[in-house]
Length: 103
Image (cartoon, rainbow, N blue to C red; front, side, top):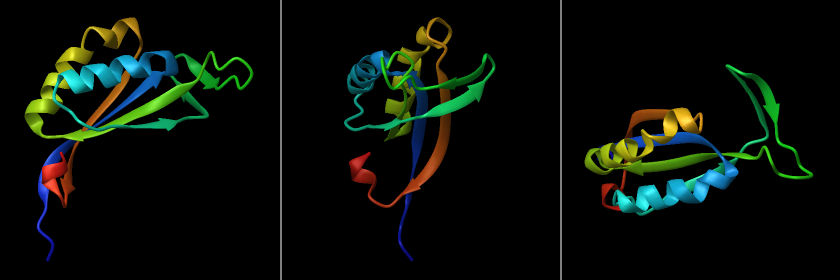
């Protein structure tokens, strides 16, 4: 059986212009990697939205990262002031990783 280690997965739904700031906050927390996943549309508390392909003004990404608990906590703490002002949706979960040295 393959040995696994528990790490923290963080997903943040973020407006495209804010994504570089999240990357800097993650790096400041010691997180060395992330992935941006482009989204097309969705529905939330304020109704439906979809990306405006002409202007890109409503483009959103899922900012995805995996880290150890200490770094994940530091990143989430740094995100706290942005939760209300930028309407971030943040998900945190435990995941089992196969190569823990990468996270």
